[in-house]
Length: 203
Ligand SMILES: [Zn+2]
Image: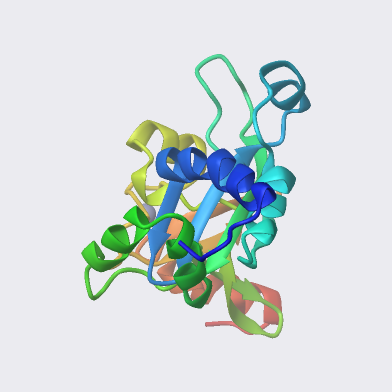
């Protein structure tokens, strides 16, 4: 704890430590925190949204960025939930540890081969070649149930295999109805046919 914390800093610390404890994803890329974008959640329940969290972090001298990300729909919902994720890069976590000493332990517990980023990455055949792209899934994607992953398109659209394990590659292919869906490499021949179709070359 830095000496002479201001009342504003103490207040910011109180507000965000519990949010971070219960919501955070941490890996070797840093820390990510998804917040619902539903204004009702903020207005009615008084929950802190991404802007509130980022402002509190700034008060504590911790830099963060905000990205739009999606979570699986809840039981009765049809569409993914839109929200924003506050992200703190790994080097900034040293400052956050001053205010939240328990975080140090979480950082030390991380396996050597922990991810260094939060994104679900997929390949996409494009006219200029095959590009590696980040999906807009919230950083909690590795912990979603199979049902949630399926609803978020993280199962192969053909064979249904889970595309999340690190030995799986995913390709986003536009099908004949114009939908862009994810396939495993086996089911789309590693995007070769789709690439050939786009560039007008045959096999
Ligand atoms: Zn497949």
